[in-house]
Length: 185
Image (cartoon, rainbow, N blue to C red; front, side, top):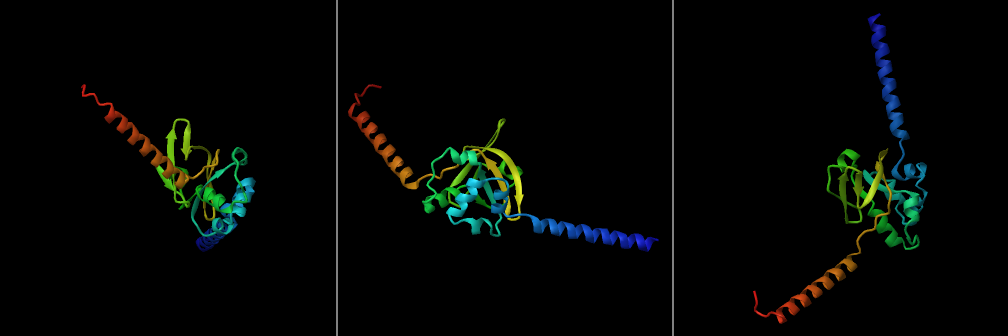
């Protein structure tokens, strides 16, 4: 009797291991999951930017996925593939960061090279200024977190121009202050 119970136990264990492996094989990639979860604009943009193969790759990746409504609120040229790729890579981090990881971070480096700020408040979690509305959509090559806005990377040239302008204005104000120095203290 003991022998039959032992054999039954081994059979059940092997069956559960086989089912677990089958579940892993059925898990979809980030792009496949995004298509299944109705992120049609994101999937169209990923395809247009030539990033489908990358985001179907081994990973792991963490994707902060804007909803279709979020994409409707911005004007993005789907034909400007370089800019589109930069915008999309600004939504992706190398590595798998679950919600429990994200809430303990202050910044997340993106594939685009920029960093997304993380802010945790009583109202919830914000990444790059966007509200995180759903978390931990697990995929075979990473995880998706849903956000309510399209994130835009900083334009380095524009940032440098603004910094130079600020330096010039500060210098002019200092010069004016030096010219008006009356010696009164």
